Image 1 (cartoon, rainbow, N blue to C red):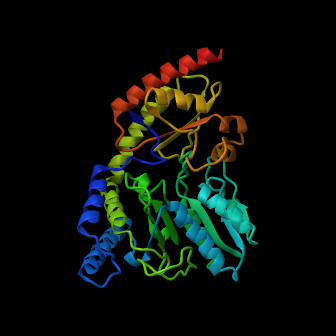
Image 2: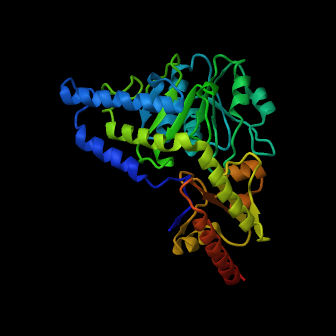
Image 3: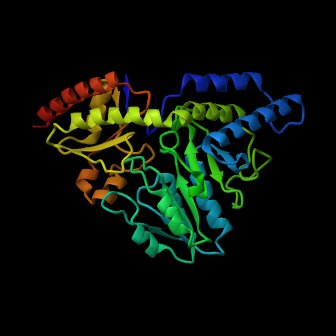
Length: 375
């Protein structure tokens, strides 16, 4: 099997799973219980949270555990909209955002909020001039992904943050789901950070939201005591510890992993360049972890299924997207035909050069077979 759909989800690392299982068996208590088992669980929870905070470069009390980035994104958008609606009703996002942001924005529009979608420049980056034009005294939130999941465009978060300093009533949320563990991130450049564990070889069902200490949110989930006042529910200690382990495995190796994946990326790009009917949708600022290309004469779904028959796994777009058109490609290239024929390869540091060589061999065989079939 050659797995090249890591932006959708990554296979769990054995060390992460082992951590989860050990905590399940050895720490059965509820971290909010007052007895000895509860105290032991609470101590482990605090240890894991402190470790995660150090790895991310944030304060431990700024961490809110969630079920994943979708919940984190919903918490920010709905929480800010509810808490600060008296300040204003304006939100700015980009066309590159995850469906959990875009669909939440649609919902907020039904509640009287105004949502503007900032333009992108020719490189797929946020159009800074358009952002400046959209910002006003009623803007309460700007929400952008650090790296989008389809084209892998790395946004200039530092530059955007500088612009937002002129609007003290406006908060800046950055969806770092595709960035955590892949590039270095400075939380000083944002007010909120979202992520999911299953994008970094962690378990599904655990993520977090980092919130600057002085910012107050309205809760998305209400109930009993938990790890913070912002998200009710029994502390999910095994999942928290598994997230700690996943971050321990990737954060210290960001640079070396980036360099390795860049080499694999170049192998694939060079292999794809020899096909006249394939358009490589890369940008100068694209992350090496994501390669997007368009097939002109073959339906993407047909190609994906044919590759899967060879046990090579790719995707057509973000796994959480609806419809068959890549919104990212359409927004950047303004070409619906290209957007409807796009395929995504998403790499990880665990992919090998032998896998990539095999992938290129299978790709060539499948591609030529389907071209002949379509003639």
